[in-house]
Image (cartoon, rainbow, N blue to C red; front, side):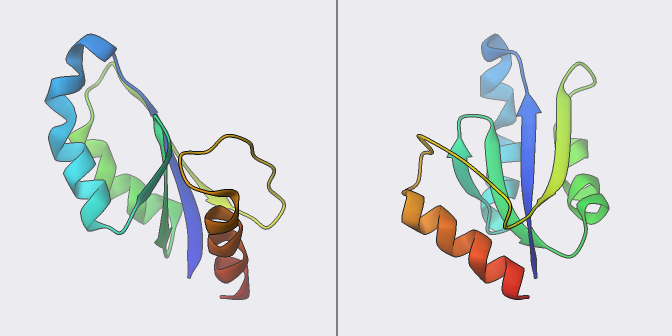
Length: 93
């Protein structure tokens, strides 16, 4: 199964309105890797987008994109080893 990045911009003052979004991401098996970025296994970016988009507001920005083995990172909220293992595992299918 592929690994996808879900990234969003929300207004900090409205953060209390997004508990439903965060609960949905967690229920999908998503892991928060940066403050507004999560990774989650899935079958397509569109499918994940369709699940998450209704939980955002019109003024928000949202991106769902497949993560490939060709990735570089620094200072994630999870360990480098944990992220590397997720990327490698998803590349194997």
